[in-house]
Length: 167
Image (cartoon, rainbow, N blue to C red; front, side):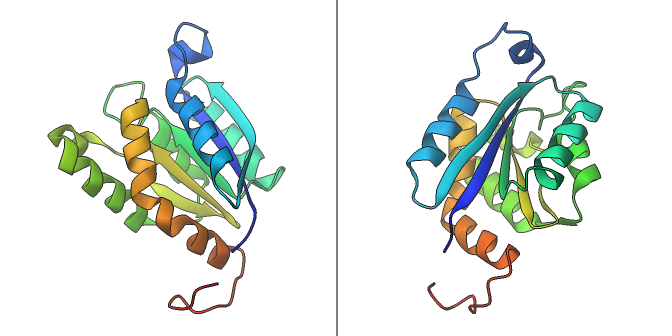
């Protein structure tokens, strides 16, 4: 359907200070770089800070035109978890079905998935998807929506083929 550039943004206070290895971001980079039609062009580990997340997401969409931004971390209920609020502040439209699909897949594995506050949404022609911070949960969540991503990105970029038609 297309060739989409991907940004991976890890939200971790400890990771941003070099006190924790970013295994979820590394896994996502490897995954997307092995998939046809996707190319990771940006990757960063920053503190789970509302203003910093907003600034990074805005820059990646408005200045770099990244097609798909996948965040990892900051989606729980800890006082420092700011990712959903920051994402909501920059998106134009929410795509609740993506977050619902991820939570549904996670609930099959663990009841703790009920604590996820992850969202997905659109800013301009870019899709932003929040994933959990653990490598295992991030993998489970992205795998739940991966089959639908290329079609959604195609439509987001103005593709005109009907949803039931393979392009």
